[in-house]
Length: 138
Length: 138
Length: 138
Length: 138
Image 1 (cartoon, one colour):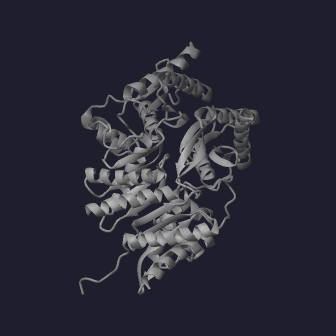
Image 2 (cartoon, one colour):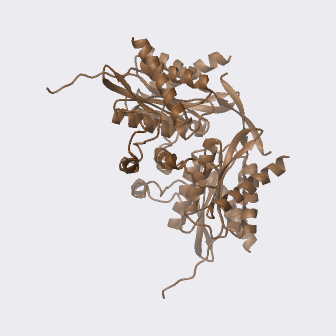
Image 3 (cartoon, chains in turn yellow, brown, red, blue):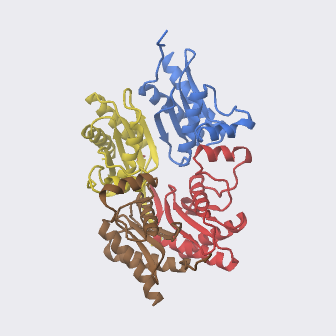
């Protein structure tokens, strides 16, 4: 009643995710900023690939924080509330595509946020990062 | 002429409001972030329920501040000015639904802001909090 | 290797802690701001007691965040680095007394931060909050 | 006359530095937050090791930014100006130990910032990161 059990990503896991995302981005020829946060939205790992946009550091991180908080992929908030939510959270909640929750055994343990490509490219790279973790866990 | 009488919520009142809101949220199965502020917009009480979104802490608080300031429920600002108001207040004024003023004897003594559900769920939980206070006052 | 098990405070636990702290503050006749955060520093619960200082909301919260991050009571940072740490963390790390980690089975699951009294009073109230949780857990 | 040649760290280099720093921190048994920035102070790579302090994310990054900007290790600013510099830069310039410039052929190409241990431990881990890069370059 007073405590609940949960799981956390280790930094070894964060590195596996990062490598998977980088490999995908390289195969697509799209340099990316990649951020991984824990379930509480605190940064675990980050990499800006050669040629990725400098400001995408910020958006990639906010995508990851948003996905960790909402527990669904970013980009699905209705258009009539997305800017209100952005303002009300000091810009932390973003509705840009490219943030994906990392779900293990039905529990969100963190999220990945990717930015510097198109929204669809960002999602593809983020998913590859998650897939890499799932591969080593299975 | 130089002073006017006013009333303030005690922290006992804030706790009653919080309990009423929590009970409603539990009965709905929707975990919420619940913030209660005084008439000046300063935080009196807050609770993040198990499973509520982390970023909703921020939006719930801004909803409460907005409702305390405007003295009407949040969400009613015309669309052509809501973003201007958000900008002009550094994001503190939000037009998201879920902020309700707490009115006693015709005077706004504070507000409750709720976030993590849909706008309508947030309003329902906030109203339950206010109702709990009214029940002990009557 | 890729996941580690951990425990989180529920909001029921946060409320027990809050009640214990409030009771102690009332018995001392010292109104307090009381903040409880999870292990990642995100706010779980907050209460500002009648007569507590408004700005202590901020310091109480930062004390809690600092204790959750450093995993030791606040106030022990050497004087020659405390301001540097405050600056380097945007003011989030504070060396004011009144922040205590909440340790269960040797693991930090969160922290309590108390502010509005003297440093020693703040610590006493924070400890009473933790004691209340330990009492229900044992 | 109008352009000057410079060199930049690739993300492959950032990963080598990160690995070297992680290996050293693991051998010391001191979990760390490790940030690597380019010569302009923009984040290239980051990792928070299991058990490192959450708030050290911020200080580690500011140490790296400071070292990249000043082109000397952090911690050497005279005490009578360090807080003035912190104020004047919005907290970005820190005089905490643990930030080291990365110098290649006499040119600063970036910096590493480490935080969560003592100042001396932070420097040791940062130096190990730089050494790892030098080893692959030679």
